[in-house]
Length: 235
Picture 1: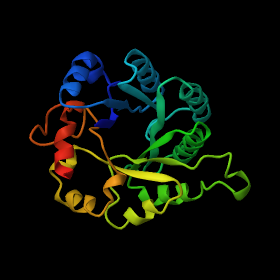
Picture 2: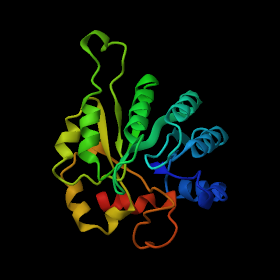
Picture 3: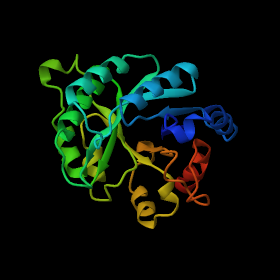
């Protein structure tokens, strides 16, 4: 059982990583992917994966709502992506909850290319932008002449919020795509209906700690040790 999306690199959890790992192992976790929101988070994620090899794995990326120079961030991410125990790029994507902002799509496209360049999974943050993201990912189909040298994309729609009507569109995307479900699955009835329509082999579970704490601990700080509560809701 792996927590495929957790922010151990955030200050709230970073100070007690050893305790979190111990508790996570006790409830049956075999690994945690430490997702990132900016360059600083990404470096911490890499450092954690080096310190706890075989249990912590790094994902490096820049969240769509983080500003800054697109080019310089992509250059640094390229360097970090080559680090040992990096398994994914993200979280990255589009977030239109506060309107479209300059640089979001460029930053997303750059991180898609990094995932393809190093054959890494892509952790997609899609908030009020699922349709736009699906259209962008459709465009990343290797040409016939380069199929053998350019790997297909693969990744997860983190904290899936695309509803029922987008499930098949995502399944039809080139490459291998998965649907991430978090603690809100334990209390959102609509989401409980959505997950029933997704092939079980395309479902991954994630805590998004320290956020999205599942019942019965909703309102408290989340931890990877709560992952079994999400899994139980799926089973």
